[in-house]
Image 1 (cartoon, rainbow over the protein chains, first blue to last red):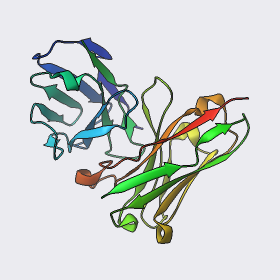
Image 2 (tube, helix red, strand yellow; image 1 turned 45 degrees about the vertical axis):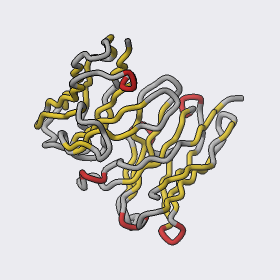
Image 3 (tube, rainbow over the protein chains, first blue to last red; image 1 turned 180 degrees about the vertical axis):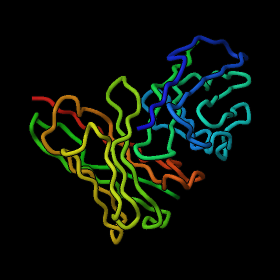
Length: 106
Length: 121
């Protein structure tokens, strides 16, 4: 099975900051990575698919990059509504695996 | 509107069983592999199981194999998850989501609102 390691597990940031979250896969997964945002008590929302494609309706301050085994989610200028937990997901092969999550807080 | 609606959660005693349902609408249900994901209180997301369009291919998380059974009824646009021998570790919100593994653009793009399963005596 392919393992996914997401870092950091939590970070403190301020409005306007640039934030970067990383996921590493235990083996190459092409660009089969999605990123999700989840706010407390809410359903996960997909932000990025195919490693770098922005989901319709998602602000352009969110971007994804990477291929192979290392992937990054970047928020270029953190907004108040971005404080949430973020998860990566590898879906190159079964079983898919979520990262452990990154809680972005003030 | 594309929508998934889960039901069937509730309070169950340890050792009991439960069947969760997920109803799809607003899209051609039979065109998609369907997936269950769960989230224990305060914890991260855990992929549980998936079933392909025609129920030919079925996948489970290794740690859950044996107690979980996924199925679907395309005529009813419905997905199911039957869980046996429930334990406290199965307490979680269970989400259904659509998407075929390598069809990247649509993979897990739509989720239901989730149904809570609580296992307690």
